[in-house]
Image (cartoon, rainbow, N blue to C red; front, side, top):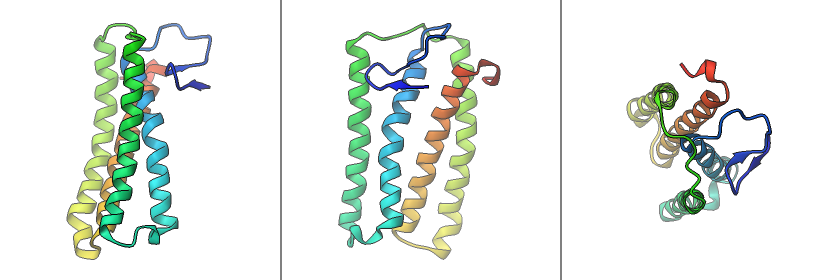
Length: 158
């Protein structure tokens, strides 16, 4: 399935229903969050000496978060300018969102327990911070992937 970033619509011709605003936001989150954090974690693993001081490390993280925010806000503005609302929110949207949020919550909970209860006794500093950030990003990625999957495969949404 091809994705047209400008309109946040999949390039398939067999869609029965127009894409809801929640699904569009899920695609937007996926396409703005994953690439920048993938690069961030690749740098942290492959080239850890890029930022030698804590201030530099914080700066790299701020750049990554800023790129994510700029991409997401730009996508939201494009959708608002086009008045690309889609169908109104209904019970199905709530069910899809609830299922995705429940699953991602457990991943976030596991990451919080690891970084808050185990790692302080074995590791310190930026390793704990990066592990916590990794679980936050993985949790949000899981949530938006399950949201998209719920719309694409409705039988899996409940």
